[in-house]
Length: 161
Image 1 (tube, one colour):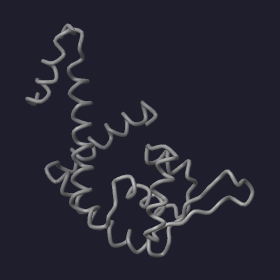
Image 2: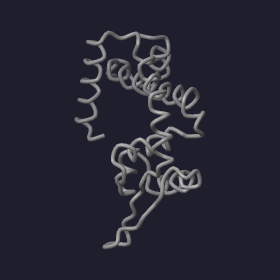
Image 3: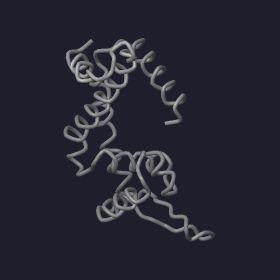
């Protein structure tokens, strides 16, 4: 166990240590630390050059893949509220990276689409982002990467994340 994990356990002094699942604590703590570290690294080293937050990038990535997507689905994909998607969309519209359109049949439904400028930004940005992804897992063998990916997918599926 890492010293941080031991510190976490030591802080839980009011709970009998025998009642704790130390492996679960270790896994979840490390997933959290990796997620936060990954997000910070990518925002600082790649996304800041484009004036993008992690969530804005996530939105642009989904739009780049799907071209047009309903705001509700964008929110689900990014793990944020529709209000957050609306605010980020306004910012991205000001940068001319995306635009909104209302469904002709149901005006309550709004779609967000990528502009040509947005496509060009993603075509320039994504190779740099991917390079960061590769750097992050450089210390793992291909088999370790596959096993970790499989295990994380299982956690995602088992918890409907």
